[in-house]
Image 1 (cartoon, helix red, strand yellow):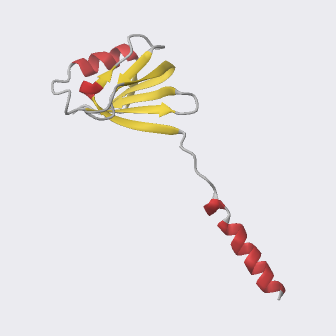
Image 2 (cartoon, one colour; image 1 turned 90 degrees about the vertical axis):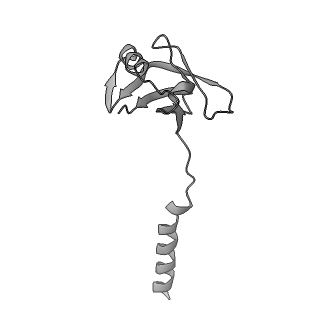
Image 3 (cartoon, one colour; image 1 turned 90 degrees about the horizontal axis):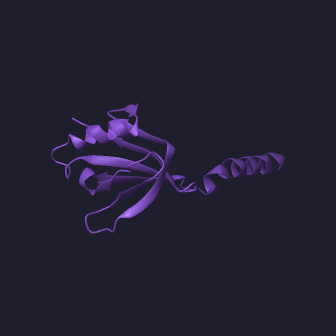
Length: 113
């Protein structure tokens, strides 16, 4: 009888993590470069459209926001320079990571061919 109770307790204990609620910390938005408005300063705002028919949404950026080109972190001005050379902006995807709790964009990344 004790073995059955112990086994039941063990199974219930192992099942508890599976019942835990998961919360989203960051949202990743994949947007076309043509639908992205970069900030002019490191502590400004960034604008983007999640889809062609969506309205622009504006989010804050900070000094801690990372700008990534081909896997390498670069300053905002170099990121702006790199994306300015892209010819077909509607075909180029950019990933924008938005931290929900802090309500700030933490990373903007692009992979150029």
